[in-house]
Image (cartoon, rainbow, N blue to C red; front, side, top):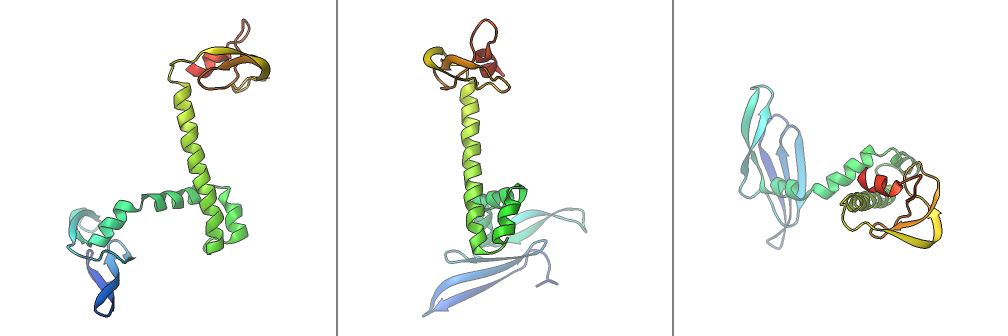
Amino acid sequence: MLKKPRGTYDECLTVVDGVPITTTVSWKDNKIVNVTSTFIGALEPTKVRRYDKKQKKNVDVERPKIIEVYNKHMGGVDLMDSLIGRREFMANVQKNYGQHNAIGQIPRTFICNSYAKWNRQTRKRQALRRDCLEHWPNYEQQRRVCKMPKCKFQSFTKCSKCCVYLCYNNDRNCFVDFHCS
């Protein structure tokens, strides 16, 4: 397979009682790609554009259907793998549990999913904070620390929409700064 030209593929079927159960496809792109599936095989290869270094131009290469379906639906797995690769805090998890074993995969998955969820929620909160609609200062009975970064004062004023305490007086107007910055 290594010496064959780019775009060639081999397909192996597992057949039980005349019924195909699984299919494994090896496809040569830049490197050999192996994919196994229980529902789709190499049926009807499609043409894709790939850059050829030797010819220094784009060429058409045949791609099996199973590779096309995999590329279409692989987003979540690739996202998690890239998050694991980019995070420095994952080094301790990999050191303690191992990088390639199943036990180590569980904490890595939990941490990456938690980080992705936290990141989405943070972006939503920041969009809500800056929408400039219906942010009203409400006077509360108890004081809390102002949520404006680098402000350590306590305030009775709470935003009606964001539900955060912010300074709103003659000396400091963290309320406006928080919503406009």
